[in-house]
Image (tube, rainbow, N blue to C red; front, side):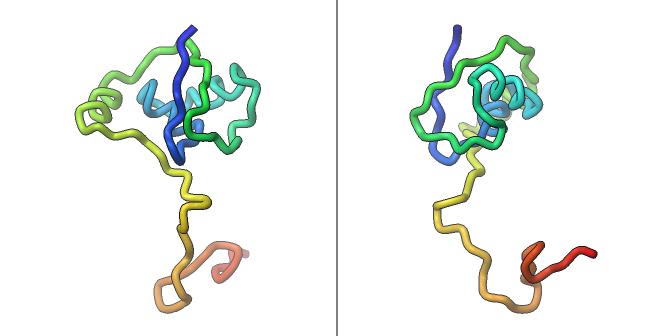
Length: 97
């Protein structure tokens, strides 16, 4: 069975996009690895990979540009800037009714 070594700040959706060129495989990865789809992954963690078709066009673009999707910004200093014109945070400064 193939395995994938998680990169820093990757989510299951990032792994799915990086390996398969599609994010819909994230749920299959979660089930196979017995983890939640929202589980916080650790750099270096090994994940079992599912046997699934790849979107070769997306995969080719990511590989040709050396892009490794990694969008989990939690814990890396990402903060909402000081409040001002044009700054909103849903549930905090912007209430949906």
